[in-house]
Amino acid sequence: MPLALDGDHRFDCTAMAATPGASASWEELDPTSTSFYRHVLESLNSAGVPFLVGGAFAFACFTGIRRNTKDLDLFIRRGDYERIEDALRRAGYCTILTHPHWLAKIHAGDDFVDLIFNSGNGIAPVDDGWFQHAESAHVLGVPVRIAPAEETLWSKAFIMERERYDGADVAHLLKAQAHDLDWQRLLRRFGPQWRVLLSHVVLFGFVYPGERSLVPGWVMDTLLDRLRQETRQEPPQGRLCGGTLLSREQYLEDVEQQGYEDARMTSASTMTPKDVADWTGAIASRQEPPPDPA
Image (tube, rainbow, N blue to C red; front, side, top):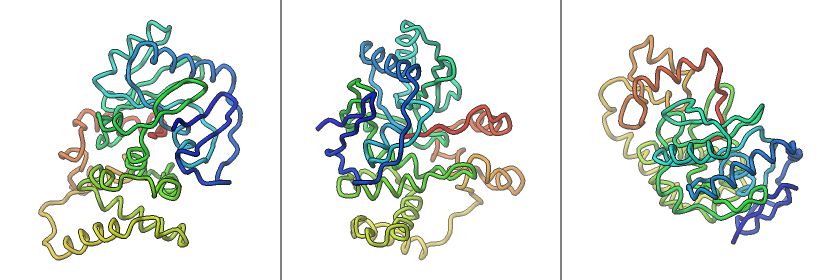
């Protein structure tokens, strides 16, 4: 069943089990912004290039929570970027590959659209699975597909910066979507980073004690069994800091001064040494506030 989020912000999320009464005020988008976003969506549809809508629009579809948004987040495969760039150039826009390991942008005055093909930490590349499990929707009157709830939750779970923490988004997604989530696929998405998922489902039971049973018992058992088994094993050799997968800034002391290995430089991430250096350098310039990844 389709979702709907049109230019007047009427909202129909019956197919997604949105939480009644959970919506917050979402101010009307500026007509210029609305026209720009709609034109980008229509241009990509006309070009036949696959993309998924994420960010505040997708979050509203999954949770019923509407909030102000200053941009539009589109998720794409990295291999489709050149086709998208060409389609948008023909539509009159210039795209900038802001951070080659995960993000490009389309600007029109003060408005912009993020083209996201990975996460900032390099662990959540947009692959075929994102598209295979996407939902149909209407955004600003344009038929689109929405990034799946599982991938939305997965990418948000790792955002733990000082200036931004997406744990509340994860909790709201769990509350609204727990019955419909493909938990097996979600576990596979987290893979060896399963502790991050465990931390969120444990915290969910604190935030919503009356709804903690929404997380299936077998999921908790699986994660806790992994934890118990791990505590019986010898710790891994070497000094690895996984914190850089959660924050690009708060664990720099560990990897730059204390001799810890940066987890972004392991097989856990797709980032290269140059990607890490450039992404770290952007902290000082503050050129890129982290966009909403889903």
